Amino acid sequence: MELNSASLWIILGVSIFLFFLGFFFRISIWLRGDDGAGEGGRKKGSRISRLFRYLGLFFKNIFSRRSGVIIKSFFADGIIHGNLFRDSVLKWFIHIFMFWGLATFFIITVFHIIAIAAAPEGAALDSCCWFIKVFGTLENRFTALVMDLSKLAILGGAAIAVLRFAFLKKKLKSVELKDKSAGVIISAIAISSFFYEATFFLAGSVPVERAAFAPAGFALSYILSFIGVDWAIPAAVFFYIYITALLLFTALIPYGKYSHMVFGPIVAVYNKLKSINQ
Image (cartoon, rainbow, N blue to C red):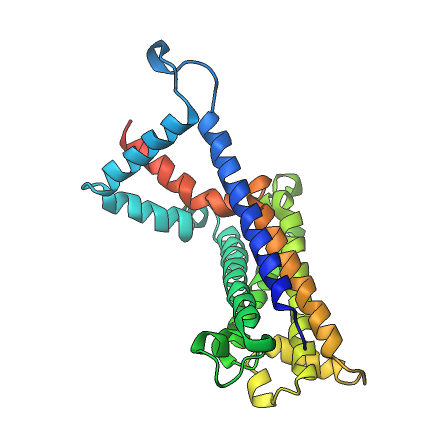
């Protein structure tokens, strides 16, 4: 499977640029707030002044006795989503599987792209550094396992959401209706990556003892093995399809209704700071 290193750097660079452009654009909108006056008839100030005021408030509290409360809120509500767990255990499982499955899938994919782009002619040779040898090929058991399990978590969360919605009486009030498009998109990207795994194993004739560490991809490769074709080109095609779709989806998260995936921890800390300083 031959890949162009320059194209990988371009795809990764454009995605990172779009993501941070959207991130700061969303922060700018939040800082703008209302154009009216604040308490006591005072002007709320420019977005830059508000940013520094919020940053000052954050550092003032993080280096005080209140730091433990803020850190706890960050992890409990922003990372572990304890507030959702208290509302519904089933919805918590759906969110955790989808959220952490996507986060892990994205991170391992970025490492995979960087390692392939940095490898000589895109091949993870024995003479390469440990990073390329670990993340630059699905023949590495760790990379294959993490990539496969993260996608299985995504599909598991989507399956639970579908079952919950099927047995839910008040379907119009379901949270899953709001985020169903995200679930469909993420699941489709995960499935395309399974095809990349399977065709990669077939193209490289990866030994069973290594391919088996990606159980879903290995099972799919066994099914596809009955089709007698050269899998090198399909492997490259599925690779570009999955990384482009995943990076583009992630880059566009800050722009739309899925922005809570990124800003959830920030909102949790902000709400806690607001309650502390009231």
